[in-house]
Length: 136
Image (cartoon, rainbow, N blue to C red; front, side, top):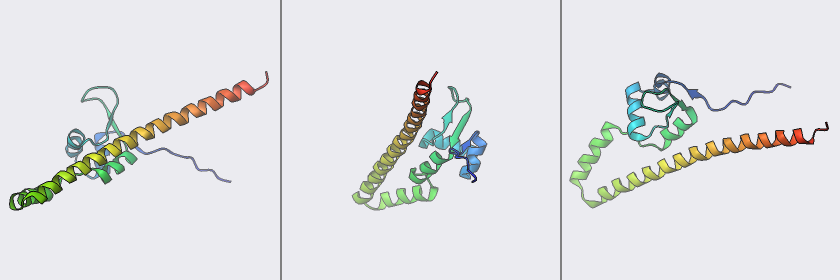
């Protein structure tokens, strides 16, 4: 019987790879990281440290983030100027929904990391128990 290897999420190892995956330019992706909290990880500290991203996190971010589109921003300003309070309330509600979705994404990513740590510790405990039970 043939076994397939279980692989983890795909990792993108540079701004170019991340931009290509998102079908955008490097500067756009960097701006999204800065302004919209695109889930980019850094190796080391500082703005110039190497970056990487995990595709599953990017997919989740794309589904939940409100990526700005010039048409939508223009429509909001026009509608906001024309109409009264209901549009303002809608915009505020959309902002709070966006904030809530960002919290869900961040908590989900944290939960995934914690689950991976837990899996690693369980494996370590099982290995330790197996070594202890072995006759000498």
